Amino acid sequence: MIGERLKQARLGAGLSMEALVAKMDHFLTKQAISKYETGKSVPGSEVLVRLADALGVKTSYFMQEPKVKVEFIAYRKHSRLPKAEANRLQVQITDHLEHYCWLASLFPVDGKLERRATVGVPKARQAKSVDDVEKIAKELREDWKIGLDPIENLAETLEDHAAAVLALDADERFDGHSAWATILGDDGRKVPVLVTNAAMSGDRQRFNLAHELGHLVIKQKQTKEDEEIAHRFAAAFLVPDEAAYKELGRSRSRIEFDELLLLKHKYGLSMQAWLRRAKDLGIISPSWYKNTVVIFRKRKWHRQEPGKQVAPEQPLRFKQLVLRAMAEGIISRERAEELNPGVVSLNGKEGEMAKAKKIAALSLDERRKLLEAAAERAAHEYETDKELTAFTELDGAVND
Image 1 (tube, one colour):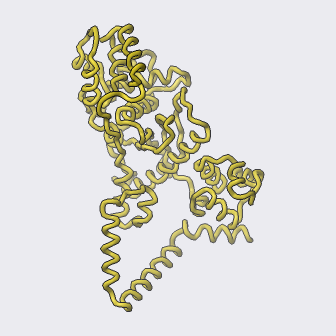
Image 2 (cartoon, one colour):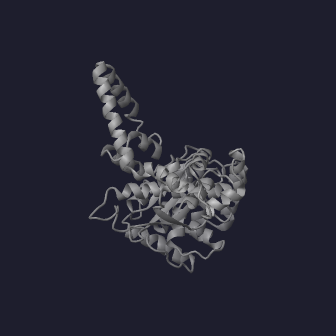
Image 3 (cartoon, helix red, strand yellow):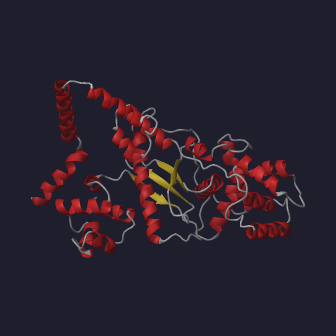
């Protein structure tokens, strides 16, 4: 267990074994770290403290049993993301899912882990043609009772249908990721996971999330074709063919840029994606599409489209779980901030200031009693919390 956690923390910090050795001023050798990670040796207490400090985690992190097993589907085949950064993001996603699943388990429904919808993300199906892709996208909309209207908030819609959605602060070269997380100890229940880059514009985020959804619901062939299929699914899911025909008609000689901009904000789909959708459905000719793409590139609109940008979407479910756990006294305000920085910004500072003023008004004897009570609570928490005592127990075992 310690070895797996050590490797996870190292990859999460974006460090190679050599880099970790250097960061610890050669306190350990690469061979020693390798033995720890493979379980051939167990680090002592001093080593664990130094490792935790170098990796930016608590020592208790190394003793925690994994709560989820994550099966990542695929990165974009054309991704230029360095391997170290890709590994770091995967660990960050896994850590987030551990917290997500733990929080969800605190609020069971009918004795089971919370389920937000009766119809979730379906198992992957095979698509032999673009018609199959369009059909799968349309049927999912029907199952989720979305109809043909624009999806107002895609992140919220995905969360409402039992998906874990995560917006990461990541390298600009990162578009998105998808995975299935198996919750250990819950009869192997699987949670669909969709990840996007928090720094992107709303239209890119939405397309990326829909793209990653495509990877989950359509069987992968492990070829470049997977990306093309996921792109087609994303466009079909965000703008069904009937909706595109209603907005544009079935045949056009050209489409004005202002018209594309209006449609972009109505459906949350970029102007360029609308152009591609119109071309794929035969509404505009391939030649007109190609000429228009050239214009976009000359004007550098392929990097940033003109007009007001679509606002990014923020997943809310995890934040809601954190706030609920804090409100019910399951986690402290400090722990809530660790799990989701800024989660208590609305009343956190004001509440702390009010508490400080109240304490300042107490007599010296009343303050002493408060401190004694706080000390007793802390001692009780330490004695009864296995996570806090695990390090001491491990130290004793190693010394024996």
